[in-house]
Length: 169
Image (cartoon, rainbow, N blue to C red):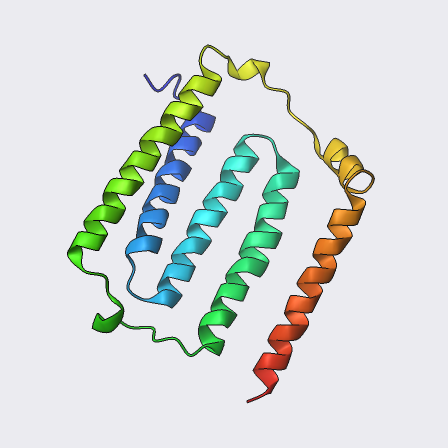
């Protein structure tokens, strides 16, 4: 059922279990800071899965962009807005809303699972073309150079805006 139990398969299942556990803790945690830290586990696990897929460039990008920048941005946002970090009954959703969200989540899981199954039905993993780091960098700095630079200017503007907001106090 699970294929050969080689080290790569075992590592995949262990990392996948950690990602699922961390994702569940992100959405069930009452403390925003703790939820952001559980998100670190999820994003690190995704980077680990990229390493197992031999996509080193995407793994390093995952660590630099998401673990290094986005999580720090979340934590700065939590600190700058002075959001309550504990459990607040005023902000908690009633039980019917939670049940409805769970039903919608299960329905979306079913739809996405069927879409993946339908798209990859009968295809072997050996048929997938892997794009190496050199090919990604060549296309990033030739074909997609302008969008890459626009995003870097946008991130710089967001960083300057965060510094200006933080210095007002």
